[in-house]
Length: 144
Image (cartoon, rainbow, N blue to C red; front, side):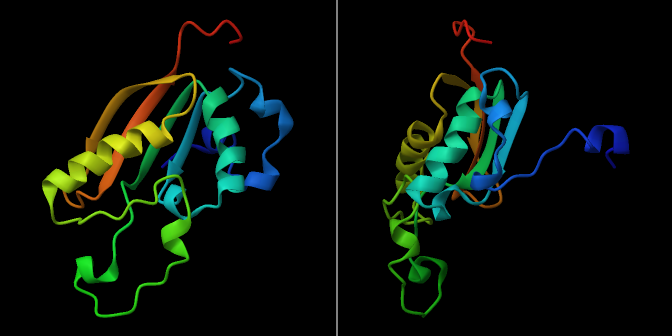
């Protein structure tokens, strides 16, 4: 359990709620985004990535690509709406490790914030169509 004094330091925001003062480089230690990058509009992603790029560190856990319901054994019609959202619109066979590895590398390229280097990444052991990564703002940036 996070003590109240530390919990009060956390800020949960939607794209239109991001305060301008935390968009300044180096004002935010860590930005975290879990399970939503693939479902955002380009406009929402652009706003969030201003925040992610200017934070000192960024943690992400998201699916590496789109997949069809039939890939998960579901017999329902696929909706095209979610397939067009996010930066990764490629469809991946989530049961094919070679396909996942290819999508994983593309995911890292697509979702690594500008001015950041990836310091850790891996496919999830239990759900290999998910990827976790941590990136750190480049030390060469003079605006921190």
